[in-house]
Every structure is written in C-alpha cells, then in structure tokens.
Length: 517
Image (cartoon, helix red, strand yellow):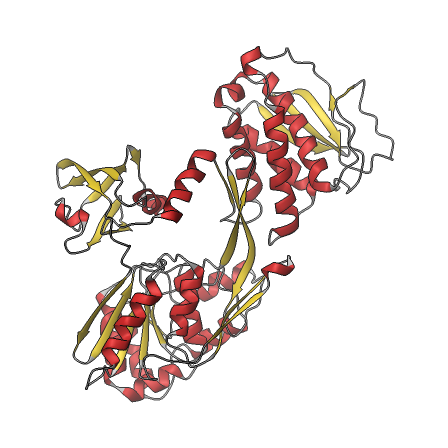
C-alpha cells in the first residue's frame, strides 16, 4: 500500500457536504488534533513494529465502523476513502501529491507541509470531522469513544498489548501506581466464570467471609468474565483504604460483599519451610517484593540448618514491576546476564546483569510455572533456566514478553505502546514462546513419571524441545510457536507440580540431569 509521504502535501477532499451538527454537537477539533499528533508521533518513532502511515490511517478510520456500522473505509486508486453505506463522504491522496489525482470536484479542507505524524494526525482529524457531521451514532458515542475505537483497530494490527487508555481509566491507573493494596484474594478463570482460588489469612476478603471456590460475578457493578481475567484482577486493585463492592455466587446463593482495601503494603511473598525445603510463593512483583524475598531467604539460610533446596512458585503470577523481576532473579544468581530488551528506538535497547550474590548459596532451586505465569514472572523463570540456576517445572507459560511505555496525552488519556521485546539470556524472545519447562506436568501424571524415569536414566526428557526454544529468534514463525507450546500445553497449577519439585530436591542426581540442558 502507498505511504503517506513525510513532508508531503496532503489534501483531504470532501465529496459530501453533510449538514453541520448542532452547536452543542460541534466536532472538538482543537481537542482531537493534538491528541492524534502526540499519539502518532510516539507510535511512529517508538513502537516495536514499524508500519506505513497510510496503513495506520486506514486502520484508524476503520475503527469508526465499530461504533457506526454504516461507516467504512478503504483505499482505492491511490486515495483513502470514507463512506457511509454506499455513499462516499471524503477521500485523501495517499500517493505523492505531485502525481496528478483525478478526485472529482472537491472542497479543499487543508494543505499540509508537515512531518509524517503531523500529516497523519491532521488527515485523520479531517476524516473524523466529516464522519462526526454525518453520523448521529458517532456523536452520541462521543469523542472519547471515537478516539478509543480508532486506536483499538490500529493496535489490533500492531500488537496485543498496546492500547489507548481513556482519561477516566488513566486516572484510576495513576491512583493504583501511587497506592497499590491488596484485598487478600486470588482469582482464576474457571470453566464457567471467575473463581476465588485463594485467600490471604486474616486479609480483607477472608474477614468478610469470602471462600475459595466462590464465583465472582461483578466488581463495583462491572460484570467479569473468565475470558478477561486480567481486567477482573485490575478492577480489584485500588488505593489503600478505598472500598470495593463484589457480587459473588456460592452454590445457589447470590451474595453482596463489601470490602475495604487494606492500608498495609501489598504482600506478594509467602514462605514456609517443610522437610528442609524453603517454599517461596510470589503472587506478583510490587515495589516491596525483592525486599521481602531477600529478608525471608537470608533468615532461612542464616539458620544452623539452612534449607537443602528452594522452590520458587511463580504459578498464577501475572507480573508487575519490571525492576523487581530483575532484582528477584539477581537474588538467585552469582552474576551474568538476567535479560535484555530490543526495539527500534535506541533507548529501548537495554541489558540487565546480576550483581553476583546468590542468597541461596547455590543449593538446588526448582521454579514452578503454569499457563498463567506471565510477563515479569516469565523473565525470572527464563533467566534462572537459561543460566542453569534452576529447574523449571510445570507447563508452557503465557508468553508475554513486550515492554510498554506510557505516553500521556493532552486530553488526560494515555497510550501504552509496546516498544521493546524481552530476550532471555540465551537470546530467544519471551513474547509468544513463553518459558518451556524442563519437566512437563500438564500432560498428566503418567507422562511426568515417564520424564522422571528418563532423568533417572541420565537423559533430560525435554532437551530437544529446550534446544529449539533457545535457538529461536524474533520474529518466530507462528507455526514454530504453536509446535513448541504444543509439546507442553499451558495449564493451571496442580499438586503434581509440587510433587515433582520435591522429587528433584530429594534426589540430587535427578536434579543435576534436569539442570543440564
């Protein structure tokens, strides 16, 4: 497809003079234009994937069809076109405007001599203004919804995590950044709904009478779905001391539960010692995670009889603060690379190295993961696996290995832009692939026993799979991603994970063989 040329003159041609909207419905051009300029300037310069401005214009314009199905966009004969039903509303050239264009008897809207981002923003603003005048449905939805829909369609073509955050949402997110707190419960996606999987003893949820197994129906009046479990988890977060109203189903009962978020800092580290093994569970990566883990591990290994091994449980851990993931991995490594990141923008290229002090004194380490282990948690698991410091047990993880930056916009909204991909120490991308375990439990008890038997015979059972994963380089073909992940399908945590971890620590020879790939 032709490109909107940098520095080119772009002319938006209106072919239908729609009746002007009422004064109170006047298109807010002075709001929309700077928002689009700021957003596209960042996207064109910083997004991980490059795309032609002409493609971005088409995708954004097509987003209006999600609000008003009568609106459509296409490119024909070198022109970007906006239609309503079968009626052409406006068009603009996407080829070099020095080439003569036969576009009918137009009315001139603008003449632009600007860089690509400004030209793209101005052209789209012109199209949006025409669509606004022609569509009562669009005016009813409002300008925020219009912007959001345009960016949603754009980001659908770029990556799964970049998004436009409306001003009210951005304010809530900023509040969460300032004062995260916990309600003391953990959610999982059940077969038919969102289920309370665990409770923190004496936490707000437990004190209010919630039980593991309760099905969560809504949070502050917003229905929740197992297909959007991340959004449900985000709705639970909020400033310390604030209230949240839940509707839950318990059997045939429907219960209303009002909770108040704890004033205590979010606790992400739980620890216990059983049979000489230190079991550490990390539910996320908050501002205090590394400090809490460090204190716990130092106290355990300062005892006259320190643990003979450690299990780091990252199952269900959806990630969190990136820096905390790096410092958590550092706590188990005696030096060397933890991870690196790579993107188009020079500032996106980074590397993180360990400081050289393994708090667990080199004793056996098993890392538990499942299909919900994501983002920062995957970085930790990948680092410990690649560096030969820990044996990963469980299933394929989620495969979220993109780093976002937040770009504030003049209307109070934000765009989150994926600008780099995380690379494990051996150079393979976490995004898409996820982390592959050395011992797979998602295929059931019999297969796990078979893999342990291979270890006993001195053969790492998944050495070939791990070698393929470690040799992968971005962009990894979708067929290879599917093939690798299919060898150990993502699954939720199971007791078998812990049983295998105990066997590996109890039998040092099996642990050494499992560590060898």
